[in-house]
Image 1 (cartoon, rainbow, N blue to C red):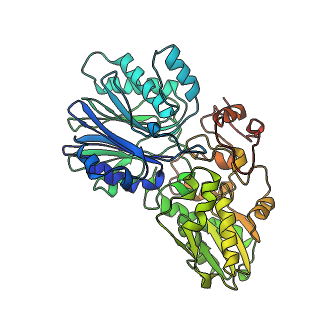
Image 2 (spheres, helix red, strand yellow):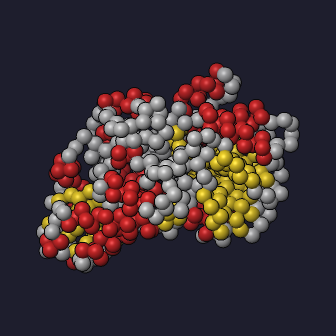
Image 3 (cartoon, helix red, strand yellow):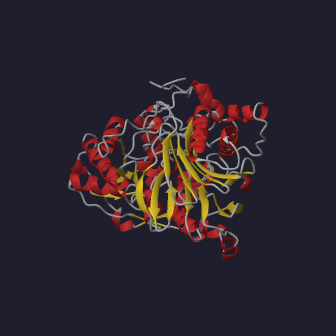
Length: 500
């Protein structure tokens, strides 16, 4: 999960991209980068850190031009990546191309070998985004018929990318002297939308980046579709993949996206309200409402679900935790030790809301269990008699290979455990999970036109159809061991998995 944005305009875009990245900061806090184009020359600045820390006045002044890209990155490994793997990436031939990418290529290693042995291209980092850039560059070189690059040439190159690349990818690229290209994988796993404003076009991961910078949401980029925005102000769309299927990542609605965004025709806020409705039914079947004194959300993504749940059960809704907004999201922090330490720095309790009460805590999801364990203990330390925990999402039992930091089974508290074993591990008096099918129905009902969702971390079904336990083991090579020890992921069961 990263946040990406691209703009083609008739005015300087450096401030516009900076503002859009601030609106996408929740999607990545490890590194940030901006590249702009003036004439046929690119100007780039990128570094580790949050947007406000990476870009100073002197950096912004050094980013002239009326088109550009930006990215915020979060690490998907035990330790943060090196600064050289911050995006955007650049390659000088053909034309000069710079690229930002949100997602994860599941065949990156095979492509890397293919690029070296067949295409004679050198990859200098371990980033799959650099692999993707070089695949695109090779395909553009293959179809280009001279200096003038036409939209149909660009779309033909994207067709070649789709044929070679596997996994999830939402991509925005600048082709020097020609314009901005954006495309999405044939399954539409990672989000990408396009908007228009005064004198320009913006493409971004979430609609909030468009609306917050004065652009009007035009529509989502469809699975397998590409758009090309030349510098003349025109906008071209074309489907570039066969056998497309619209399966956006359901975890975007559960946790990742901002509640004020609309992704693939689904309001994230409404999705979380709907999850609260279905979760309320699960709570009633586990804990009688008369045994619950108060419903308290674990900030911040769970608030809509907690409010709707409390309303339906006729229970008081209270804020029991105060969040320090200057501490990063623990889910995207590298390393279990850092996550555990940050929980109490991030949250502080309002003791009066807990003391002497039976409290129902509502969280958006439970991934590693580290945060939940600390929060349950904080509630007990504040004097709660009983602590119940409800998750608006089902148990996260399977690795995610499409760009979310949950790829190692041993890191997942629900992997290989029953609900009661997870409850004992976390230390709560009752644990209530959302049902998988109820989750899909609650979110999918908002846009019935969707084919389905990528819910692989919950149900083990990998929509790209090319994931096996052995591949998951290979993808996990090099990750740091968690505090809970190593587990052999090659023996991971994938029920109903589509294996290629």
